[in-house]
Amino acid sequence: MAMDLPDLVLFCGDWQAYEDRVYSVYFETIIQSNLRFNNLPVRPRYTPETKGKHFGF
Image (cartoon, rainbow, N blue to C red):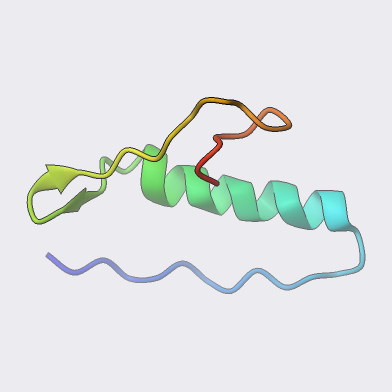
């Protein structure tokens, strides 16, 4: 099953807001969606946590 790519996130001059939005898209698309590749779960590395975000981000 093919998955559509998320919409492009545009940078509006506020780096922290941009990073938070990109992380939100990452979290929804990769972590919460139970993404699989070759029928195996995709599990990005969480530790060590970096600025409250998954290390794999």
